Image (tube, rainbow, N blue to C red; front, side, top):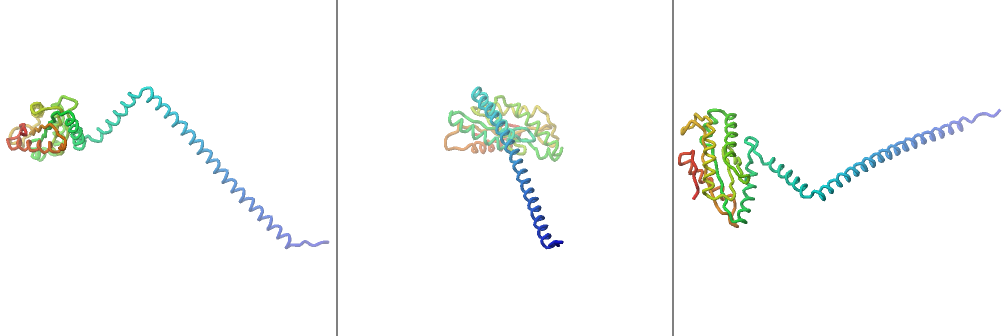
Length: 253
């Protein structure tokens, strides 16, 4: 009887185990590659679907532009204008803020240079506002500023005129295509509108109600000049109104 060669059997067994292990590794590698290819296929399908949708959207947009070009352009302009306005609104008074004021003033300054027309500016300040805040509290002070903002807005009539909050209790009104007499009329209307609100002000030594003082400045902008000069002139006129007793309109020479 032939005897088994145990060493040979063990060697063949180890070789068989190695082959089985290699097959497992190859299978695992193939499985990973298959998963990768499957994911790649899904990503490709998603990309194609997205491209198809974007193509459809683009075709719709192009069709709209080609068919209703003016209307689309108008809608885009209105959307951009709304975004610009929202970013430049004073949160408390809902009036344009200082940034939007300066942008608008610069734009109107250049426009008046081209047209050779006058530009007027009103600098408005609430009289004795610090004593008002000290007496009634800052929350009531905020309500007061909101009411005054409404009064100033009611005092202007044309869409081209801009009423804005300059800062604190100061407001600025820009009046394009407006001469000095026209600006004075608007200023007196605004002053009267605020007075008619009859906002109580027991800390006002001049009257029992809230009032405002207004400085008026008018110029015909010229090339080489800057709009901030008009702000400075209106501020100087406002100082004259304050020094003259408040609750009045003062006009720069």
